[in-house]
Length: 304
Image 1 (cartoon, rainbow, N blue to C red):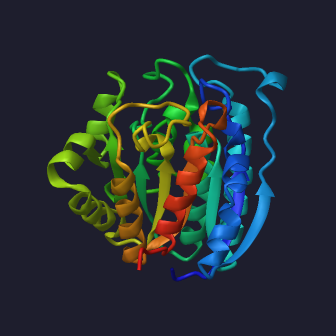
Image 2: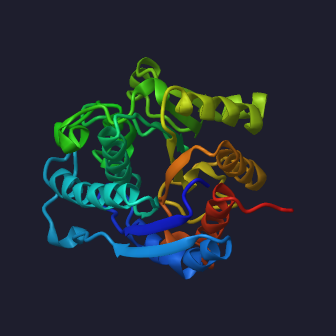
């Protein structure tokens, strides 16, 4: 990678999710020795600790169509500042989630970093879900189903306009890979957004190599590089059982690794996050261990 110093930050939030437990994801990833494993690749690693997140039990839910909105905004603001600061100092931010709503903070921080340099960024979003609901279309009101829409400038203004502007990433520079579970009312927004989508059927038909080549090209077109947002529910539950919202029919073990290896080969990844690891429903921390393996592949680990 172009940056030899990795800055790890935990975002232990499950306010955006319907199922509890992903707030323990950062701890599960650290227990799986992510810091040491990355250091063994030759990187310098700094762990910034965890972003402060209040517990759901102490907070009002707020509006049922956008649950915990005020508090999620506050966490994303804190995370965005930490990510931007790390990137400004020449480090590659690696954020450990947490539910996927934390991506609003991570991407906002990276977008601000590039904006100060008069550059733009791309985004590769690997996920079983499109995450492009809004409060009007969401069947649950859970914000972890809305972050990609917010990043593309669609959704509640407190989330879309962190740092005062939107979108954080132009839709034509967003690649959405691995989707297989899209809400009925969400589908028109996905189709009309301008985001390049790669469903599991497309991966089945074309193969992961071709899909990732196009996804990387999409995220890199006219940009200074891309952020990689990896939701572990993109991987089939037979390999990653401990995730926030498991869906059968996902990426195989080798497909997931190949995607990460191609990301590394591109030399264009500028930041990364791993989200939706839920040790409460995992088996012997298996999902966190796989997440660490995938992070290592994205950062340069090879078979030979």
